[in-house]
Length: 399
Ligand SMILES: *Cc1c(COP(=O)(O)O)cnc(C)c1O
Image: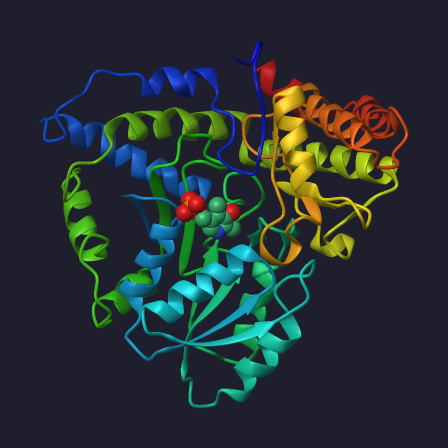
């Protein structure tokens, strides 16, 4: 038994705000009720605002981010189609793996973990592809395994410079609703997210936006799909319904989660995440440790992967933090297994909550003999949070 609240600081699932949790706790309802369209239509319209999307369509499939990947690829591409991707962490790796398993021809660039989408390499490959064999360009906006953020707008610019007509697809599972994402402005054709990260809900929904161009591509794409077919979903959504039984409680929760994000204001949401993240980075510096992200241009505002000194196993640290302090941190995945631990700082989060995670990580490291000074990370974060008086948290709560 854990007394008090447990500290959930994995980069998804994230903490669920009380009003969202209450919204999910509803009696079962008829998903064919005559008044359901009055709920579904504005839900999907308002969802587009979170993606800063005015032209395309929002789609919500039962599933998770992985299902969103599958929906994106199978609806718009045919077996053997070439896609351009890059791999720099477990999530960009898994997306490539999914593409290969559904029969796509993935041209991928392996780059150092701790860096992100290699813009120059993308530009060169796109310029060299005179025949336009590449049908889609993939960007993992936020690599959750390494805490690395990539430049989606930069990829669009590279595509424009090369005059390349491929679809631009973005994995925004751990970024959309937390950091800036501009579907229209960046010319994104498919953006994939999930319910359990920035949307502050339980896992269970693949949340996407698709451009008109992507919808057009879906009319001739020949990959097998059934459950995730855009055609069925769009036709049912046009009527204000779903093609099959939707998880209504999650949709009721999504309504409140969208309202929260819009009430705080997207700019404030992005500023809050940046500020919270900056405090964590100050703590890491205070500890004398370094991030997995190699350079500030790659720093993620939703998750920080912290490198432990050689000789210490982050798996042990995680186990200790959980058992001794009731604190869940993220572990190292694949190539960085044992080497990094991650602090998720996205979703329904404020400074004091995050300070508890920093303190818990600090105490756990000291318990295991990692050479960090008592209070070094906590005080660095505290001083950062104290100094910045333009706290958007206050703006939001005074509204
Ligand atoms: C969590 C995550 C996924 C996988 O999503 P699931 O909801 O676990 O299927 C994909 N990409 C990124 C960047 C993620 O953070």
